[in-house]
Image (tube, rainbow over all chains, first blue to last red; front, side, top):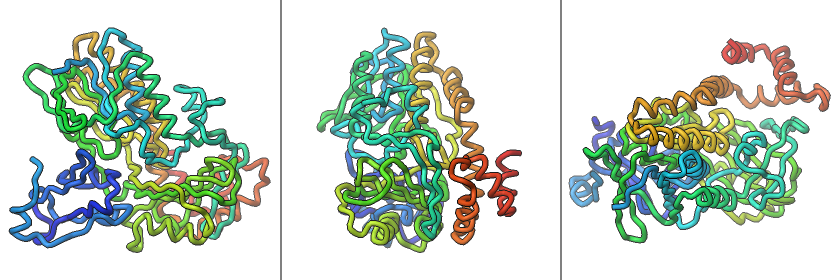
Amino acid sequence: MRRVTPDTIAVVDLAVCDRCGLCLPLCPPEAIHLALNILTVDRDECTGCEKCVAPCPVGALSMAPLTPDARLLAPTHA
Amino acid sequence: MPDVDVLVVGAGPAGAVAAWEAKGAAPELDVVLLERDRAVGSPVRCAEGVGDAGLREFANPDGADWVSRRIKDVIFQAPDDTEVVLANSGVGWILDRTRFDAYLAAEAARSGAAVLVGTEATGMSRNGDGRWHVQVTERGRETTYRARIVIGADGVETMVGRWAGLDTRVPSRDMESCAQYVLQGIDFNPDAIYLQFSTAIAPGGYAWIFPKAVGVANVGLGIVALKTDGRNARQYLDDWIARRFPAGARTGYTVGGVIVHTTIKKAYGDGVLIAGDAAHMVNPLSGGGINNAMKAGRLAGRTAAAAIREGDTSERRLSQYHDAWMELIGDDHLKYYRIKQALEHMDDEFLNALARTVNKIPAEKRSLGRIFTQALIKHPQLIPMAARFFV
């Protein structure tokens, strides 16, 4: 899927996230995963559209710069 | 590799009823009900309100230990706190979901289904043998279940739907972001539920007080993020409670999403059915989903049992589940969804005026129908909404 913003991706603060799963069906490329009580954003799939950010009831999601390092270091979920 | 006939993912109301209905309809089948969390019914992500008639199709609330409170009245509150009381407007219940969900799961077990807690499905694929191979993790141990039919009753965050290639995504405008406290030591009518509509308090949704006991209630709200001023649901709730119940003790807290959309286009596929919140089967006007989930679970369980007996678990056979749901409730949700869209255009000033109009109708004559008629006479700007609803 085409990137909406070329330089940012969604990131989750797991200390704030309540694992409610609200953000999963909001994500157009289905880049957000909830498994074994951990919420993850697949950095290869996230298009930077921000649709998950405002609806989070506790403000656990935000946008962060997408750096080449971030891509390399991020866990991905095929 | 455990081989089962029906694997139900998620032991909420949809899943538990699906499991017991499948087993009840075809006792020879192996039915397994998986719950990701360590306890069925926990954590509670729900305001716990349910209508009487729908509930009684599945469980008798009279004297049940899974009921918190019987409700007799509905009190609508305008943005300026003007109250419109609908006395004896229909009986309902506030459940104790930790006990209610456990009761339903126990009924599923009593019917002969196996209930596994702390057991999470983490992926599934369809292999050449015409079965779903479902990866299941229990305390770090992985097992693959082979299932003829998988019923995805795994809630708003459904992964089963996604794994099966079904579209369970929802537009932002149809997602209610909700936050709720259990408040103790607050003053309200414990026989009534309160619903307050206001774009300042809960834009795109409403705020609620659902009594659990005298002085104790689920106090929460739902908002649509697109309509907010930048605060999140929890911040809206904190601000509302600071004004309404500054002395209330917060003894519980939950957040979550309520999808106020219409049923997903396709709640079935080869060897798979999706039920309840996962299939967007919540009433889009009220946000209520418990009774609908149980009704969908019943249809899914019975369809699965019949399909396996016939030896045909194809998408075509299972589409009968979707058709039955749409006929039973799903088509009505299209109407409710249109009303919801019309209500979105009412501002706080208008809602305050509407409340004062309705309060001129004597309380004993205050039926929803009469309120609607009076509202149309005094507020002709509502007529387009009525036309959309009734035409």
